[in-house]
Image (tube, rainbow, N blue to C red):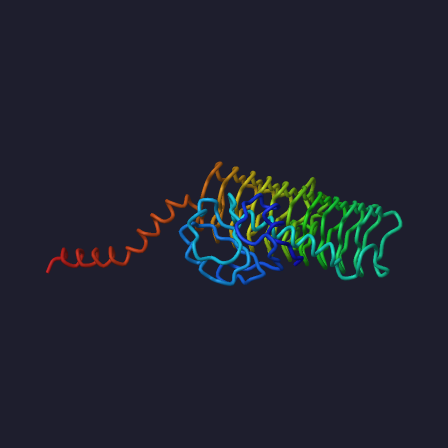
Length: 348
């Protein structure tokens, strides 16, 4: 990470500085392990006793803590939201580091890259070692493609997007601006479409495409299938974790969070601001309303209204699920009572 002074961090975060403005910050750490040249944050005013650590460099603390910290010898920055201020500082340190440390293979177009003549490469794009770009594809300004990425024919990568090593964008797909796709992800793989004819599964051509809107992030080894017809869509600002599978013709709204190992079956529609937790599974052709939460390992087999929170398989409203679980846990006791009552009622 690039170094910053405490004064620079205060300016970036809009905070009020107390202590040495010239202390140099070269890294970041947790509040429990922060050292003299690192930055950390503390969210809860009731945890101020942690700040007795003598060698901490710079800590972002809530404004409500002002005047309550007595023995801390490092530098404090008072902010409205310490966690968000920490993120802003890290972004600045990381961006400066990336600017001074280009991807492996350097800047520009690496000599081992294979680019079809009709592909269009924008200004300041970085095309890493052994990348392949198909005919009629568009790579806009400032795109970074790290080693071994592949972009199929007639696809588009929007400006400012970054593809980490071994990302595959199949043909006829569109990636928006400022999208991040992590190593090994595949966008535009064939949807899982077959028809059974005379005891044989015949493949249905998947001739649609994938549209990934602006500011989406897709984790490593995630797969987003192309539509059979039309489009599979990932809405603006949605963040997809590692090992997620999005099937053909799925439509995902804006600013959703989809966590690791979740699977979304074909033609399901997901509204805006939906959270799908780890290992959850959604059936095909259902609709999930805006602002819903599907808790971890839930199996959703029917649509959900706006603002739902569900858990379990089959997924039920969270409170209902835990009420039923409480009753189920008492079944052995109830059964034993029933057995004794039945025994006592039998004729002797």
